[in-house]
View 1: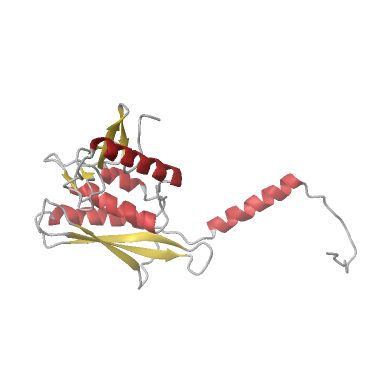
View 2: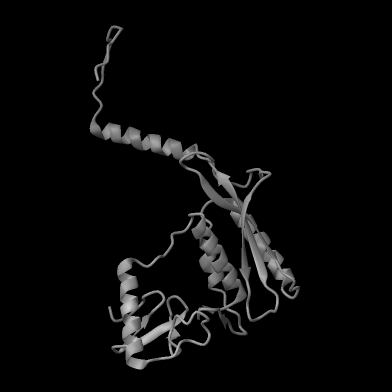
Length: 233
């Protein structure tokens, strides 16, 4: 497209490809710095989007309800993003009330601090109860109630896009299905009594990677029917 010059040319400069790239990169950096972000001085809006997660453990007759409220940053733009702002835990069980309130306040403070908050997931999931953990429906082992709270936060962060979903690809799903059929044909094993959906064999072992009782012994090594982990290669 031709551009008509109305004024007298008094000077010119040839812009190299490298300079163009630097200018484009600078424009990207300027756009990033102008985005709305969570920080300590950010005022709490009147409306927050929230999600509630129910936790029912064999350690208590009462369930825990975890509510995480999010701020919506850069709303109605291509950079729109939900960021957790606060967390509450409610339950009829008052035995753990003291540390539950303390935990929610600390986590909420970390949320409001801004930056990368995903590190808390692994920290919480690594907490072990000295009295022993428990198995959830489906055969997944939980080392503690704190670890299950961490898993609920992980689920929420994946839901709002702050963490990646570790989904199995089609090849892994096909491999797991073929291993399952081969194992069932060999052993004719009964389904797991602890799994209401009957998705894993009764004699499956606990997988060291995903903590689900879904690892079966085939061809001299264990293969997990839940996450696909195997030492067989």
